[in-house]
Length: 234
Image 1: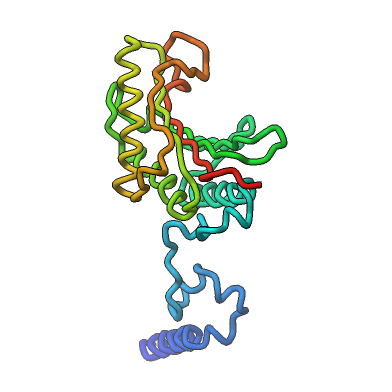
Image 2: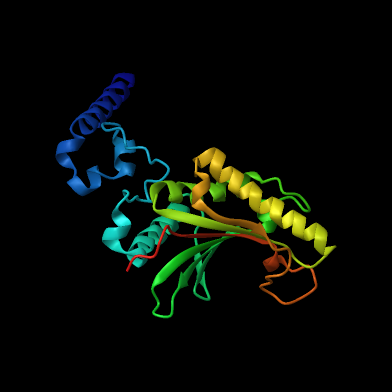
């Protein structure tokens, strides 16, 4: 009886081994190329995804060839894809893409041509209350902006810090300026974005409200990063 069991196990093991060895020849090509099959088969080491695989890139000189709108369209699609494939899915809300702690907006001219991208980082997610120290989540979100600026070198940016209306204006103004500087410093030190690519870095306290209220409004507490091209090319 035991011999029969051992023989059965041996036969099944042999068939499984033959399947693994010959998997490349008996499975359709499109299935063989899948990561799931490669992991199961063990016959091919699947390619590891790298940061920026979904972002794409453009070499210097592309702006003149493509024009501003098409250049930024590629950046917009790449940035969205990079966010989503790294675990930040977006939902379309009122013409904007809204994700956890971040919002991606298109800034268009009167003819609906893309002129800038606006990345809005939630202030409550990005900073501890009353401080300008970046949280780990903020650094993760800012890294996406830095990756994008590295991959699309003919871009520059403007950074603005914003608070709600609770507390003294002078303190809020100081805090908003410090927060915008923290974002800039992260982009410079980690992503080596040179000084010349920062066109404006400032804080505005509650002078540019999204919701017109003197109460503690979450939407007003934010950092905005505008990414545009070094010049407008038609």
